[in-house]
Length: 454
Image (cartoon, rainbow, N blue to C red):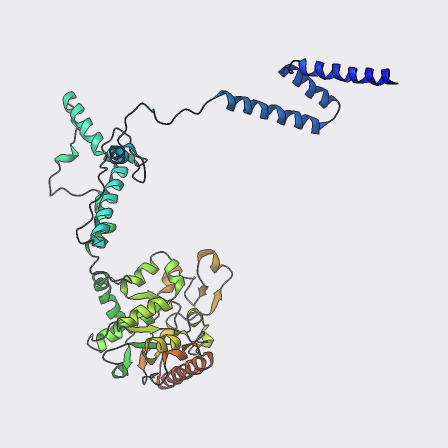
């Protein structure tokens, strides 16, 4: 029995020595092993062998290579000099623009900040540099307008005697500017920067409004023949909110209110009105409204206006006011959640109710298409007696007679700003103002004898 055990141990030792002395498998042998595993339908074994082979190759590769130093250790580098040269090398935040090459001249000098830290001067400096980069990019993208190519080509063509050689730099000061220069000067950022002191924070452009003013006065005086009463109820100074009904498929009531105060009160108060949000998503409409005095409706804008003691007009009905059908004319819709009351309480402003009669008949709304309006970003598509039958001409307002009435001021001085969060009180005050405007509308409709002649 002992001999048998000794023989087994000796056999095991011989196998171990033979295994240690066996050479490593060649790639061909490993491939043969994988092929045998495939033949035996053992995909797990194939995957394990492949992963092991890949790991061994990566390990040998990492062990056989040493990381090369990023910088030659024998170089004598000055850290301050490297920092100064970093912008030239394109390191850090000052990178070479993608449209420029290393051979092109590039002003890497950082903009010098004004001595007094004027932020406006810094912005103008950065905008000037940005405009220069944009002009360079445009010139490079259009070979015909490339100044560098024009100068180089001019010299070559002059030598060859080409008759059409034109030097762009030779244009005199009286030369007519090109299309790109014209639009940049009159419609681009340059025109806005040169008149930044005139255009206010909300986009009112006095020069543009001056061009539109004759049209607005014609609509007020001759086309709608507007009659305005109760202007004396408006305070001569201080914060004031005019709360009016909203009507008309094309809401012209804000513009007519502004024109009425300018013409009837000798221009003593300047009115700004809050316009619906969807108008500013339409092409040209939002920009036009901003430039003639409208402001995007939100609490923050209203508070900023009232903080400057401005006269602000609001239309609490919102979109629901202008989407009323003709059979619902002069019936006030819900006044939202009383946002104008909270605004008046917080800003300690006086509320003046206002009723506008005649705007409902300018574009009588017979039907509205709401399921197609979302495709073009509108709250609804109006169907009137003339639209869409006559196309865009069908949106022209009818010459109905307008009447604008300002009621007695509603003072909230006996309520403090802290009650703006009292939902019950806010709702009661909102209903009170709404009832006053509804009574003024009913009275105005009863008093007029004709839609067209008043």
